[in-house]
Image 1 (cartoon, rainbow, N blue to C red):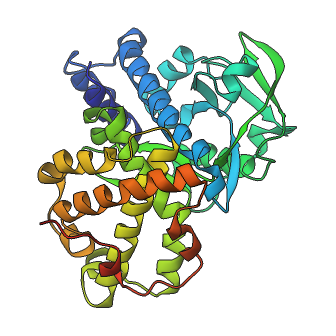
Image 2 (cartoon, helix red, strand yellow):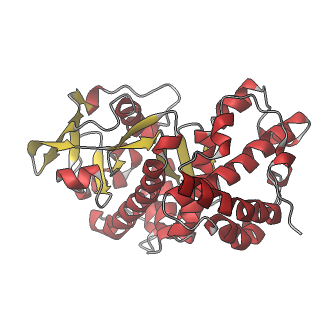
Image 3 (cartoon, rainbow, N blue to C red):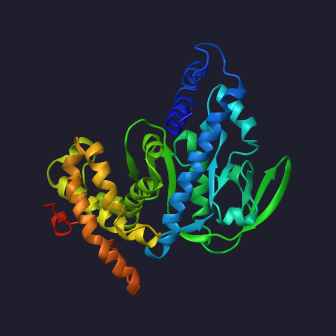
Length: 355
């Protein structure tokens, strides 16, 4: 099954919990329950996508920790839980992934803290730093399917970002303790949003990418989009927009809102060049990506709040040599100094217009 197909399948499981629809998505029978064995290929495709997203996201977040005023330990794990699966799929997922707690390890990032500590895929997390995962309280705004993940993430963010942490897991019925030494990372949680649109977003902590984009893009394309959203978080754009009293939704594209949103978008493009470079990517990657991605996906109402894709290409290409110079000279990107200033809507000062 294609990666895109597997993402749509989990959307069905989460939102509908209908075995009959799930069977159709798998190409199985049009009615009746789906046997647990029929889920295996899809579950493994989901696992691979989750690990891939965490690997790319953590690469960006750890490489740029020095730029971030909020940091957290990078554990090097892709997490999931039984609450993400509904209907017949939930029982099948519990069996397939050996869930015995609200959170399990889908997989580890190669060379990351969990990998080095000997944690494995299908370990169920019992506790971290002495706190049982079943005692973590979901927040009022958490989505039901990922509430346990969000609660765990918030607790981990309160822990020292480079101090060894004790993690208890249950494996094959036995509880074992491992000590993981994390790396400092920017405060961020990376998540795929099960949807067939082409969208990425950030809310100050959470960075989401739609399952469609995750399935269609190669690793470098995903890295460009994650870097842009991580840049929004690093520059505290949501907080600064709130302080400016912007209107969101359809009203975002009118009046003074336009200039404020465009300023954040141009700033995120510029800083993303630096984030990518510091993570070992070619600083010109973002410009090349938008040259291909822009004509296919840019347009619609977002043209009012986002620059034209050709201007984004020109702006990011112009920033590439500055990113190289900043790294060579050990300097912070200039935009970092602005993150505590009010937005002024002056997006033209940063934008390079295409010829």
